[in-house]
Amino acid sequence: MYIHGAYADLQPTQDLIPPKGVSTLPVYFGRLPVHQLMDYSGKVNKPILVQSFSDAVTKVGYNDSNWDDFDLCEAIYAHFKNSIQVIGPVILVNVLDPDTHKTSAKTTSVTLTNGQGYINNDKVILKTVAITGKVLGTDFSAEYTPDGTKVLIKDLKGTLTSPVDVTFDEVNPDAITATEVIGGTNSTTGEKTGISVVDLVYQTYNMIPTILDAPGWSHHPEVDAALKAAAQKINGHWYAFVNSNLAADTSADTIEEVKTWKSTNGYTGANEAPCWPLAKNGNRKFHLSTLATVTMQWVDYNNDNIPYETPSNKPVDVTGMCLADGAPIEFDQVQANDLNSKGIRTLTYWGGRWVLWGPHTGEYEYGKDMDPRNKFDSSVRMLYYLVNDFQSRYGAQVDKPMDRARVDTILNDYQEFLDSLVNRGALLYGTISFNETSNPTSDIVEGDFVFDVATTTTPPGKSITAKIEYTTQGIDVLFGGEQA
Image (cartoon, rainbow, N blue to C red; front, side, top):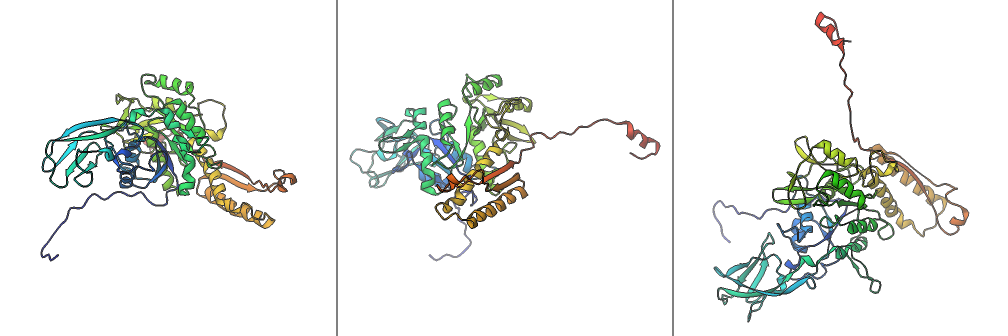
């Protein structure tokens, strides 16, 4: 095309892409608006890898306002639309099946203006949209608006008369209960659903799941228990950490109530960090488990993917706290510390910003006699990191001849790795050894070899205190003397 002059074209907003090389991998479980897609095959009870916001919209749909029904849209927004650091990838597991979780067909009248109009309904199963005597995709088109709240109908041939009757099926998010989220493995077919789908992540993407989260569901004790169980020895090998939420409704809407609710309902695992209450930013509500997961991922990335730093005291993109119904709730750092003393992560306003507050695991309780490795989330996650790394690093050595040279190679290689972690402050101490006491002849002839690793994780500086006292020594300055 011939042009002559000065021109400018308005381009669509560039999708923010998370940095490459992120190895911390969150896995989320819940409901997604896959009914927005013409083809949602393979989008139910399957692990779906999402790399960016546009990738999420293309693969699983997105609703910008109705997070109560489509809870994993919260995770999509929190990872890829936050104003602090966009971070991914994430794995999404959707349990909402439009083919089964739906209501009977409905009919609505759509007024067309210049050949197009809207169905003001965010639950329309797109592929079921029909107009009598017309063919979808030939005579008319149907697509969701970018915010996912309504469906745009377009007359493609100029043959529709306004208003036009449009029929469609509706997806029914209310049909999903904690049972579907928990899921399981079919004893006959081996098919996995719900939280059990975490077992498919490694074999599908060659990626190790390291954080599990079900933000709209983990306040159900049975879901929390399923998450903690699933996070141990995934595929017989991998360990993941769980970010969970405590109830924030009338059963636990005060600090005293939620402390009791936590222990009564068993949110006391060393492999979880229970959170309370929720957070808000304008009209949006966020579960703190989601914010903790996002923050863990970007903090790990900034530490070369080593999870030795807690997400506590890191900024989050919110403007305040609220309960599950959106009602505001306020308390200061003194009360936040009271929650922390019972192993509950929360928020506090500090240094001109809202930050996550609380570095402990669910097992923690101030004054309690407990295994020191389980006090801090970063300590537990660092140990999981070492366990996962060792298995991944030396899996290729399995079934090779285990002579002394191979033993020494493993010892030297892994000691070098441990030393590198100590040098950067990720560990205080780390050694590996191959001891005769751990390797009796009866085990060696069976081909079973054990390496002993001893390590001390680096604790966070939970409190930093200066003891300041008054002294009269400075009075001498008034008489021309010098300070001592």
